[in-house]
Image 1 (cartoon, rainbow, N blue to C red):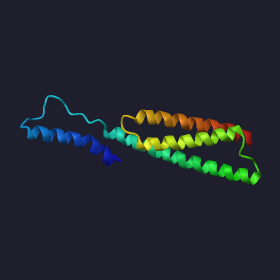
Image 2 (cartoon, rainbow, N blue to C red):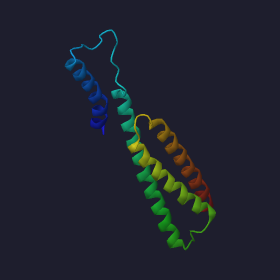
Image 3 (tube, helix red, strand yellow):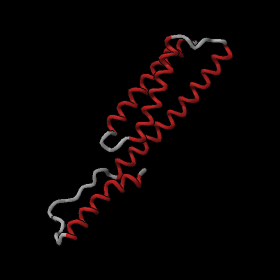
Length: 133
């Protein structure tokens, strides 16, 4: 992923330089060239995505264990809270996938959507976890 971001940022800059050179022009030196994505921002984003992936795996395990426990105890999966939990889980997985595919422009929106979905999942889990005690 890091390689593709670098290619997206550096590629157009190189193309501009080639076009200027072919036209016999030099690049303006009085203006600094700024990269759209800093390596620090990319590292932070990669770390955030890895944490989200870890959280998804943890939730997957937690929900699997809950489902197995419910089968053993003969509980039904028909309560409204459990339905909300299933919806929240599906939305959280979807938003985590969106994080991985988000462009630099869409990153903040994807991050906010993931955090909202994860918060709703935690809230629904607290409801169901409280019922099972």
